Length: 160
Image 1 (cartoon, rainbow, N blue to C red):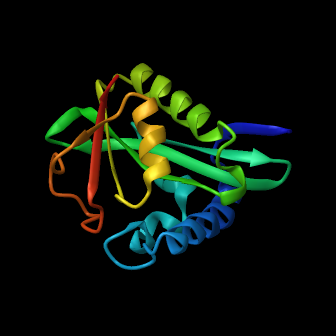
Image 2: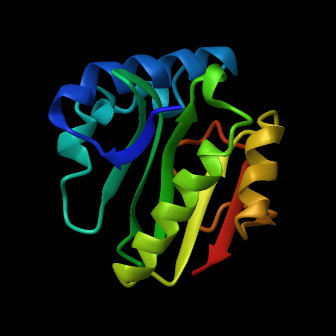
């Protein structure tokens, strides 16, 4: 399989938006309160070109199979980044690509000086939760701060 993980590029914007919307629809999260309504969805390259952020895509030939990013969580917690917009096409799941993607992101988050990584997801995304736990994330009983994605009902954090 000729698959690579690389930083997002401007021409990836339409493809990654389409992929994210596909997965959100699959899990019933195609409504306000989820990434579905994030204004950055149509220009991910620009959104993740800001200081302290990065976004990687998984590409096989010319097809995007997934992506994920990190960004600062909030100003009150400077050592905490958030794993954001991690979505894999159904064809890419179960092949170890998600694990490779998270490993790469967390290594870069450490290099950028982050101490912990937080994420919000859905309780129904059990495979994703299992993947996160394998990468060192542990469940939380509540969000660490009020988030924009008030539709999420599962919160996790890991030490970097």
